[in-house]
Length: 116
Length: 115
Image (cartoon, rainbow over all chains, first blue to last red; front, side, top):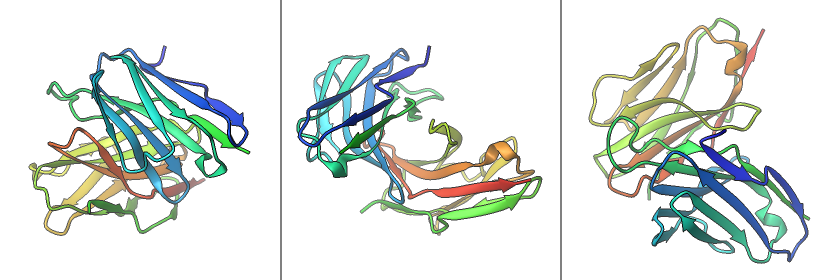
């Protein structure tokens, strides 16, 4: 099984629909992130969480919300999807505890969302 | 503002040749990490190489090496003996040490390795 699992891998939805993207990890990392990838723009940070009670907005949080249900689970919601939210979404995790793996993000396989 | 710029949207190289991908960044911080990530058609983000800013020695991972010029804020990636499997999008990114592990990405360079 993958260390960071995203569901669904692909989703097509309609404008105005609510959609949730889910992320779970088995790495035991405390930090989790949601990024959005658009062609020519790279990856941009939507939200990040240091632990269950610490959630922060990233660069492009408008139109999105998140929930950290447990240390291992971090979900991203689009309350009312619009076409310009069509993108590839990545969940990532990292470990703040130090050591050689600290500050190295591990990514999920991505969730392709299309809003019609 | 902290930014990363990759000025080459697309590049191509012949198999077995060497190619260098450019990256510049802008930050006023002194403690940070720099990364190159690879994204093949499978769309998985794969760490290629990492450089700590306090280290003067350039990082190397097998056929991949970097040229880190801190004063110039430049972090280029050299791929030697290019292989067909190196075909991918490559992203340069940096992370400020005391800012929660947030990666800031460049726009990406699409590399095609031709047989």
